[in-house]
Length: 109
Image 1 (tube, rainbow, N blue to C red):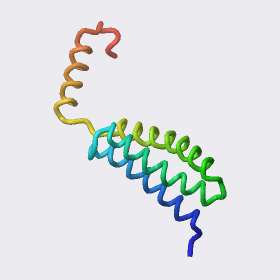
Image 2 (image 1 turned 135 degrees about the horizontal axis):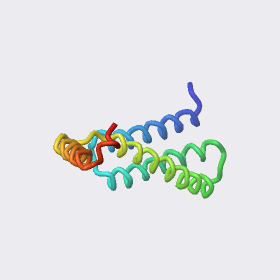
Image 3 (image 1 turned 180 degrees about the vertical axis):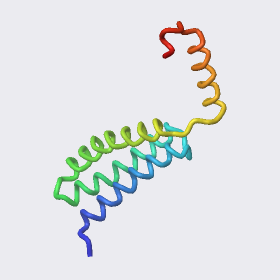
């Protein structure tokens, strides 16, 4: 059977992946994913730090710091790679085309 530290590390990893997927697939809003993801990530990373031998206060502070870093990174990546709706994509293409039309001829090549 796997040690408890491995189990808590897997829980934390799964929590980070779900936080990323919630934002990437647009299942929840970014603020909701931030709050829920931060809460679960803090819980699981604190459990991991506690099973590694840290005291309760140290485990909580480590969990908060690491969870903040990983949650913000996962949400940022999910938001960056979120698919754009067709109407927004069409609007950006139109703006780019109109911008290119007004450029001098020698810069277009």
